[in-house]
Length: 96
Image 1: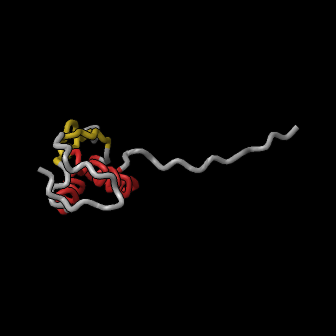
Image 2: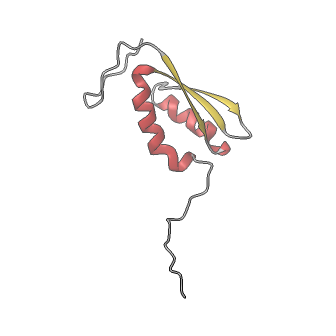
Image 3: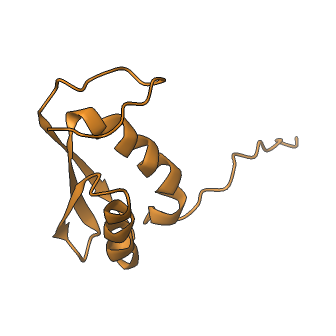
């Protein structure tokens, strides 16, 4: 049962008891850190490491907390991404 306080700004899904999985690639050095963050959110999601070498993890979350998890992951993304930052697109001019 999902016992989290509902956020009035988010759609209500408190009756949905499904467990959803979210697969992510994170920096390998940040897997443990992410696990501790999730524990700090009262076990918001269960993190399973599928490939430590590749940084592949599975997050299992009750459907009623899925939106909260996605918002948290979005906020943490810059610290978790294993991909290098991409410079903004710069338009080049062709000279004749």
